[in-house]
Picture 1: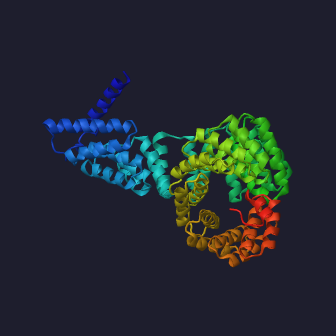
Picture 2 (picture 1 turned 180 degrees about the vertical axis):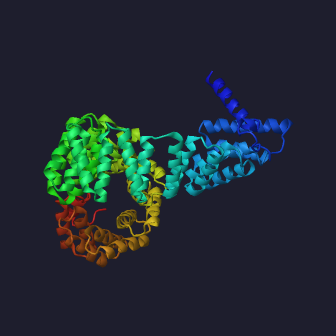
Picture 3 (picture 1 turned 45 degrees about the horizontal axis):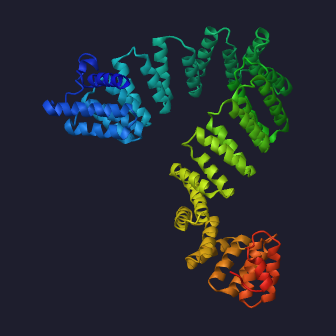
Length: 581
């Protein structure tokens, strides 16, 4: 039954688009298909079927199939406006902006008076940020349809995006004359008048807002703020005093008075009014968050404001305890105060109320990473992946977490998914390939490990971490030692006192049979390490043995035995005073 309904609906669409021009244009306009050649017989049947298949695929979300069908239609009828109309919309959805513009323009060129094709072209111009061109089309449409209110809104928006304030003002004034006064339109005009320094008109429009909304204190506050900005403090003070007298308990008045007393330098009274506003459930949470964000910027250098912020956050938790935004903004504040664990608690509280905000999850993952709490990274990234499977960072964090837990197969699975999603994110791709190199090596897939390292280095040749790991693993496997030595030397040149890099370089020299040189660098690795690992000490012992310094070798082997990182054979080396492979 569902398939049948879909067929009927799509058939109606096909009929509409392929039908006569009178159903699409106003009387006297050009026919939409006037340049199309007349199809008959099998060609017409083939065209209709292909066009229908294109529509079916488009509405099913199969853009590639839809595009193929519509392009086949153009082979049969190269100038068909209905097909080009559909293609222009499809290209926008697929991100092929230039092709969308071309198709929409071709349709209008053939049908210059067709209302729907003009609307489509204007919309395509908007979507491709050709705002000047879009405005020109809407001007044309308004000339033809002067009572179509929606065109004025679209034209005003196009002028705003094109930074043409004068055009936007003229459009909105015409709209107001046509549709009558509205608060939203008056507010938009007020902003534009102020931007253009048309103070008289701005004042007049603000007074209109106050007159039309006698019980809306916000507009009185806006007018008072306008006077204050112009330096007309007497008018501003009079309005604020009027607000205090007529609306003593209104929470929005408290917000206005907060700004008023701040301007006067009476910060204690300003904060008292702010507290009262924050304690009211009538003031919406978004208004409060806007103030909190502004205060957070000011609190960086002001300890008093930091203390007040904390108090306001606590008030919010009591006034709006079931709003996820309360806990998210609190988490932001605590994070900025470097209280990361408490911050994460707040973010998790926010998620428990509303888990649909990816940015909050993102904050949790970064805090997990900064605290290096691997189990939390794995837990939270796994939960995040379930909700946001197409976001790259949860997969990346999950992969890194499993890598740190030595769970290499799980790490590879997540990192490979991250790699797919990170295409074009160069810095992240560099890290993903580096981690894949580590993970693939640990599961014994050397080819994929080397390929991953190579790809990471192609994108960032100076990455010391990758150069070191890649070089060390090559030396362990006894492969491409010249390449390994060259990579390792870069890290030592850049970091001459880094014990890890010195150890790698020394060990490669050892593997190449250059024992005297190996001893030099391995001794430096021991020297520059505050607490030499068992691996460094054992490597130095092995190199000393090869230079016939048996006593020195045994001494370092014994030291290695007491540390982590030494091989399983360290005991036998000490016992036999010989190398044991």
